[in-house]
Image (cartoon, rainbow, N blue to C red; front, side):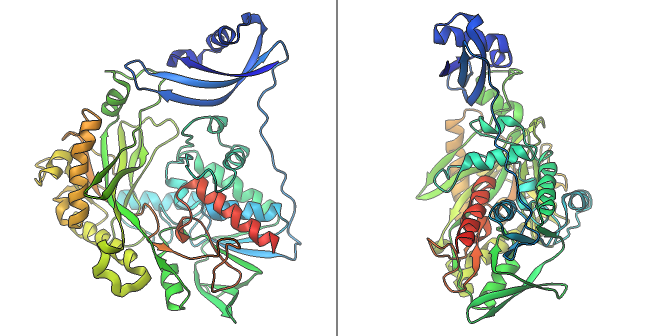
Length: 517
């Protein structure tokens, strides 16, 4: 017999197989010897009381042999001789999972990635962090795996109606992710483990007959009679295909310019912009777990905050327990920061984006740029941050209370941001409406999390790439561009996803429509 049960356990008990079987026996009314094993279906943390608990939903085997969870393994066919070909521009989560779905559907994918493979990309990141020199084609946003490779590997999504989340998670496990992503309430892979997973996906695509080409920056679309026929790369090569999936990510501004210059319909869309804040991880643990020292069997604590300030939404974004703040710029003279964590989340700091919503009325002075108004607004803030930071991607920074009280910090605490920080007034970086909204939100956040509002926290500017400021429209059913036939906008850059899993699902959805044609 098999039975699904829920247990509320002390953190230490969840690492003890005998303790779990004992509690399972009590819950099911069975002798402990009758419990042959269990599979974890769901795992979450309940930290509402002074004693945190782990909530486990289990599939328990009673009086029958235990069967370990079966991981679905997809066998990918050889599509090297397929007459159908699809060009995929961009090797982020949307592009990679679109390619895998192409292969499943008997279509040969040709991935064109402007950046480098993960190994070569890592060397460019080292130069950026240590020397303040950026490669505009190989950085935290561009390269194999896209921004997802160095964005912490969070897999939580609310996009439950957009596709099969479990399928995406199972595929990640098939390519090397740990099995716990299948049952953790907020699954996470870790930046240190993602490159190997991305590499295995690439190898699968190539071994199945797909093509995976690096340093192939797309610079033009060849269109005839409103049908896309081929794409042109910076080295002068032309690539023909039956369909083109545009999965270039939220930072490929050159693609937005290309679309606008070719009079291909694009739209401005709301996004968010602000700062990244870093606290000592121990402080966040103490606040969230109501303790002076976090138990060994509890993960570093996270948080999620939201506040309305005079109708303006302010919220935490991409919270990274035990994480690091990284330079996420894609060009010279622009300063962007993001956060990531290793799989163990064992760094001494906790960081999170704190951003305010930006809509059309907020960027009225940029309306001359049409659909690119939000992009130009975003870029102007990044350029100001770079200038005030003093160059080489040194970031302007301020202690939290000093930020709220408009004081330049006389000193700054240690910070995980490797290029360095410079004490500055962030009021000179952020637009007034964003500065006002975030200042007031911090005060309210401090009321929700006692101890959060402190000058031991440091604020670094700017967190500006939360999502794309541009949407590339598409037909709601066919998922292709309404103006250009066989062009399929996809993922975060097109405005249809917000994270690894939702982008992966969108890539699969678009490919399914191509296969159905």
